[in-house]
Length: 243
Image (cartoon, rainbow, N blue to C red; front, side, top):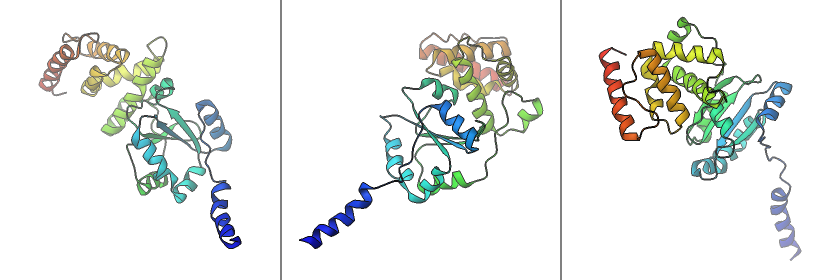
């Protein structure tokens, strides 16, 4: 009897005395302040209660002991997709799960979306990271040297910042970036014309109309079918112009 009781205690003690639980911040300002103070990267985990793959990653990928050591080296920030829309918009997150890696100064180093295995996640964290070019200070030569993925990522980030701004215009540098980008590659902005957010559709429509001197009958307040017809006319125009 005593032997069985002793064995049971040996099994339960590790479970009752776990000290390896990782702390996740929920306040972005506090997380960035800690990162600046400790000179560590910030890992942001965007999740929602209804996200099945978010829960699955938490139970499998993020629970891996080796990966947890990598996580412990960084400031960890967990953002609720539904309850913190301003943060979601700031980082232009549209799908879950999404992980965003920042340096100690808050500059984005990279992001990972969708369910990932432990090896995939660990490899992503271990690969050399460098801050993306500042999208508020980009010349024509910089734009031409970017990959399509980087152009889309930075444009999406700036668009989200602008519509989150109470004035709806963003900073002068942000608006200058957008007007230059839409003039260089208007086709890059077409996808935003069907964005579920009205503010995004209005901003995109205004940028394209200003750049192309034609609105192609696009009305951001119209129904999806009417918007699709206008977008089709716009795409035909861009194809004919080689854009």
